[in-house]
Image (cartoon, rainbow, N blue to C red):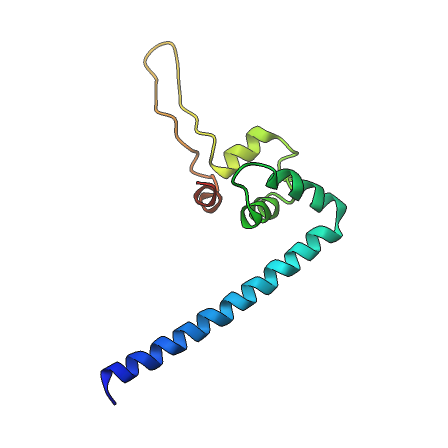
Length: 116
């Protein structure tokens, strides 16, 4: 068998697998949308979250899932921002202790990366 023929077979197989995975992702997205629409509280929170500029379906659902629909931190915006890794804090004192603002090491890096 020629190398180019093998490359073609592998390439076609890879495209087929990616296509099937994309179909499954679309199905899961539709199912998640149905679940959100079926629950009043979820749909209201989803509507509020997606009203922010740049917040799409995947980001909104991820934020809702990781925080148990924002109940995990008793709806405290400061705690949620810390968990998401979007609220950097520095140490400042009147004498000599000053550090650059940084995100806490326990922040959820996946969410931070997704939001940025």
